[in-house]
Length: 109
Image (tube, rainbow, N blue to C red; front, side, top):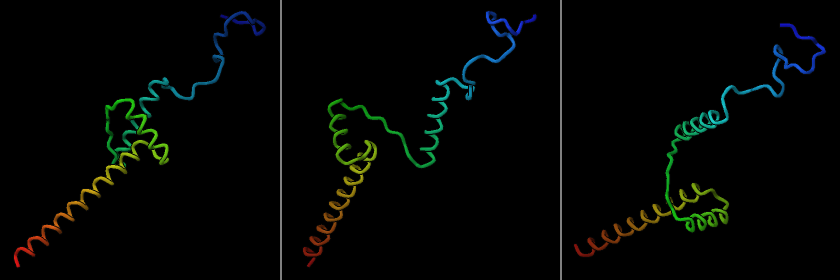
């Protein structure tokens, strides 16, 4: 089948399609899936673990306000609060143990 070079009405059957060339052979949906998988593997390699919470919207709004005030992300803020709580409970436990040790020493005398 021949095509005249001056023919502007016929679709170019032998040339490249117009527009920007495809740089990624995958669809956008597949690209997102692949990137998300890579992100999860990277987080896993860093020792991070995913956590899902189901919380009421007003609690999330308050959490977002706290995070904005402190300039932190939700995960960072929650991690800090858990660390503070653990440190506080260890301090309380150690002070209780010290108190018990003092009480037993006094009662032994």
